Length: 439
Ligand SMILES: [Zn+2]
Ligand SMILES: [Zn+2]
Image (cartoon, rainbow, N blue to C red; front, side):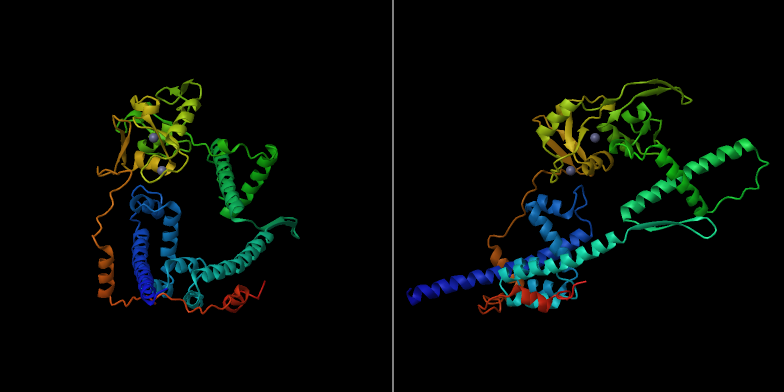
């Protein structure tokens, strides 16, 4: 190679390195903005998450968007790594890898790893680091799981003692069941009191602990009586809404909508629940006596639902696309909207709520396209317009960094590595606080 050509290529290489460092510095600023936008909930305007908003507004692919949000959040507690990125000294790829394992305690050491090694070295060290972290976490989870226990034994006076430690989800189930059993016992007691008359007031109201003890008895009895059958999941979580037909058609109409337990729900919520549901129509008299019960029908028949899923593929709300959802009647069936493909659109649960209860509007245009609007009437396009970019964005970027006093040049992000072999095992042993100290 002639010396002339070689120096031209050197300059080209320097320019690449310098511009890359500028872009990394600009990425730090971008991540700052994303962190603030995320923390202040700026994306919560019909989007599922900050990442979903980024995908829609900026055009990042969903994986990259999630990663940006993750790194942005992590850098909020890792000021040294954040600063190194902002000065263009550490590449985004390195920072991204390091934030997967760094904590405020280990940040300094990992920053040194980032400065010394290439992106590939950093990646390998982080992978080894995670293995140590995972082992520690697995040990902790296993320890907690092994510690589950329920002891039932007899006290000296003949009473039984129940003592235990259970997994959080089992505990939640138990608390819920005890509450339901307490409620049933209370109802029973009230019924007996009423029949016994006002003379019997000697019995004191039991304490909460006493009620829990009684409730546990009822739980055991009920479980044995039903052959310990938890039932089908669909039945366990069924929600029953009683709604007056006029309310369903017109939220302003007088009437009521209540859940099975008597909780009132708004007519908007009711319309959403009825949009795609199993429906049993009951007619009753003004005083509540049921005079007629119709057959159970699906609002959207299974065959039509299959076609709907095939056509829409997922939630149609701009920027969402979750691959499953509920069939939404663009004009509600209770208002005379037909259950036909053109009057239906697939929406995920979150966006079904947005349309029914949060004021987002959707309409099908004559050409068949869907048009969404925000609650204030502004359109919500499927693909937002790209912002205007200056003719020479690199010049603008350099000028901005210069104004901030940043000195970025071709060697700003050079690793300290001199070509020696990387011994990952040794590096982790030296750096990781938990390495070499199992248990
Ligand atoms: Zn709906
Ligand atoms: Zn959605």
